[in-house]
Length: 247
Image 1: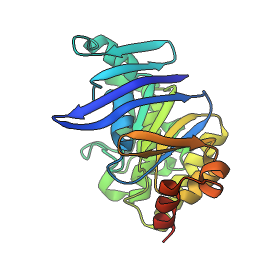
Image 2: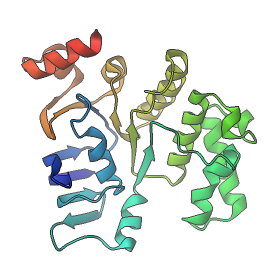
Image 3: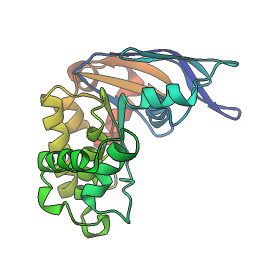
Image 4: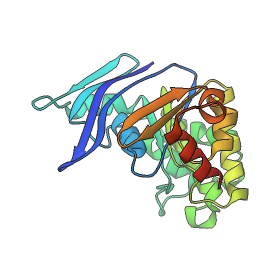
């Protein structure tokens, strides 16, 4: 489903990703954990091509891109790859001048060239799925943070991506609002949506993850099931991180 080989990304002289190799199976939820600055978000942004890697290979489904000193993808290749991925950000990123249903319709109409009626029908079905059909005509400022994030999830799902990428989707929410967003994400996981989630919520990781990746200092330190990494790890760096998170 997703195959990443020898992925490198630097910003100036600061090397953030130092040769990442990662395989993700279709229908599984992969949770990425690790300390701040370990490269988790940069890895997600490279998968969505919001950041272009300096070196390496990214393959999602049938699309494969190779990066190097003299090799970067064309705009057409970037757009084609992005259609495979839906990204949900920490900060919602909804258009404030559009109501909820228009936010979800926007990509369908402008990128996929669907008719407004078809896009609206699809948007309403997705709002129903995330429990916000009654908010279809509301504007982002009229919604709670949890509701805005659920709209963002519906928008990411609208293009029918092969994989959903979540970057700390609940870190800006209080516990009650966090719970409503995590509920939607759990339901998506149970339905077999391929998901890659960066989070500090270890309880969510235990409940949802098929696999957990621990990153530190731009490399993957270890990977395994929730039981292997969160309960039975012998790696001192992971133990230290888990102790800090639980505190």
